[in-house]
Image (cartoon, rainbow, N blue to C red; front, side, top):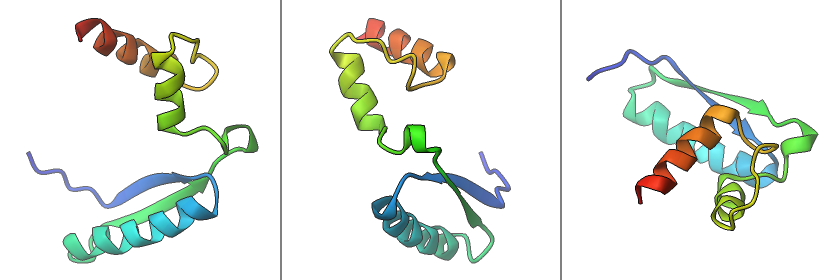
Length: 84
């Protein structure tokens, strides 16, 4: 299926994310023949130290992740875990 995407929205938590996002932006621009732009939004200070790997680790320890993810994300993670 082909989508006519014109932009990719990404989040930045800090400088290390910025460096990664800059390189990803160049790749996305190149493979889209300059048609796709990357829009970066800065994370709120409350979320600057939360990453998907940390959330997955907390989740795999059977701890509550409600304050780190949207309820829909938590639900999908629980469904996936039950299916394993």
